[in-house]
Length: 143
Image (cartoon, rainbow, N blue to C red):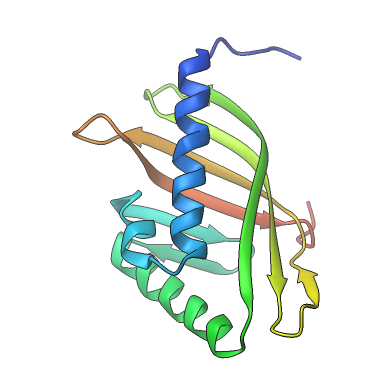
């Protein structure tokens, strides 16, 4: 296995980026969550769902958050085991595992199947990170 030479500071920046983005989503701040995507970002959940553009991502996430809230379910996203590499075009490829827990009003907890997520992060004009693409592959999807 080759360990890529990614500076510690970049690992820390990526950690903070994901923590902020997921707290925004889990807190229902969809405009804040989608602001972390490029205007033309691609968001895919294999095998079928494909969203293109910040607006489409925001609309889909708003609907999802509203449905869970209407059912009295609190969701939390857990990301871990991030592996960072640079791409040939200068972007940052981040591969990680994701788990989503659902807590019902009665206190019962369920979770979605764990997933492998592949993100491509790019620098915004202000130097911050943005998601240019996100592909989520649940463990239930073959190969």
